[in-house]
Structures are given as structure tokens and as C-alpha cells.
Image (cartoon, rainbow, N blue to C red; front, side, top):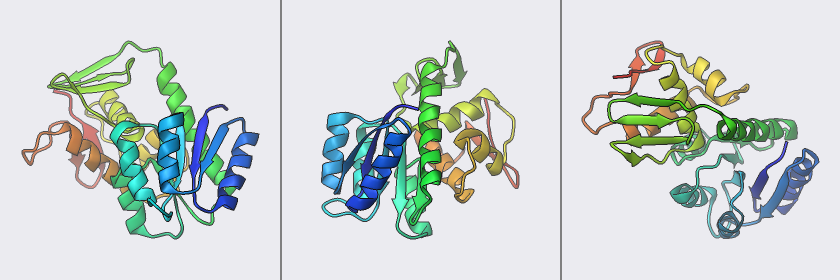
Length: 229
């Protein structure tokens, strides 16, 4: 495995331990010990993935995540100090791709990092000249690009992968558990509401604001599907 990972955590000992273990796996790793330093290093270094703590001085993890998502779409794994549902949901709402609860298993964290970076590499290397078109929406698989009415829609990695997966199997209904397995791609320890949050964010970006959904529909009691029109 290779890739650039930025660890943003004010507990230097934890950041250094994560750095040490990821470097053993072949990653290039930098650390930052407060939110502002983390933002500065994101701009300077443009990492492939960020591991981001929530409770930090200067800028907390939520503030950092907001600033990251203005420009960057690489995966972000949030570190939460306690298993607070509100922290998880807020992080996902702001565009986090994953989260790990402290104290965590280093093996689990490394597995999350590998899975997220593997998906980036797979998407970037995918040799497909596929264009999925539905109404005003187009998904260019080769360019890793989504447009609505010709305007690029800015999506996070997870949002894009979920949309592409559903659109590639249009009109097929998938349960939340199936989507966790197929899109997140590994045993996910989070709540299945993670899927609901990601779907909601996607709808905000691709659906018209008319109270009715055109692309991602819900099959009550079953799951979600993409309707190609």
C-alpha cells in the first residue's frame, strides 16, 4: 500500500503512534497537533486521506472538516473520543467518510485507511468509458465526475461511490446493509443510519427542491434504488 496520510490530533503521542504504524504499512505520513496546523498542511501537502480528531485547540475537527470540504474530496476518517451518536451524525453530515471511536484498535484503524485508499486507487484506475445519464444528471465514470444540467456537482468520495453504485444498477433496490457492504466495502462498525445520512446529503446535491425525489428513491421497509429516467 502507498499513499499520503495526514493525521490531525492534538494528542501528540497518539498521532505519533498512528504515524509509526501507518509508515510500517508503506504510507507516507505527516502529523498536525491542532486544527489550524491541520488545515495549513492540507493546503500545503494535499494528502490522499486525513485522520481527524474532533476535540482540538484553535479549530475543532468539525471546523476543520467544513474547511476541507470547501475544496477537497479525499476521504476523512473522524476520531471520536466517546461513542456519541450526535458526533458521528454531525461528522457524516459535514462530509466525513468514516469514523473510529477512541480507544480504538490500531488494526481496525489501519483496515479503515486501507479500504478508503484502495477505493480511491480503484476509482482512479478504472478503465471505463462509461457515461450514465438520467434526465439532467450525468455520471462520467472515467472522469470521476457528476454533472447536473451541465454543472459539476461537488461530491465526497463516499457520496460519489454510493451514487455510482446505485446508478449502475438502476431500479434495483438495495437494503442499507447491502449498501454498507457494497459501497463501504468492508465490515463497517457504524450504524446503518450512516447510509441514510449519506443518501440525504446526496439528495440535497442532485435532487430538485420540490419535495419529490427524482433519482434516489426509497422502497419503504426495504432500502434505496436509483430511478433512471
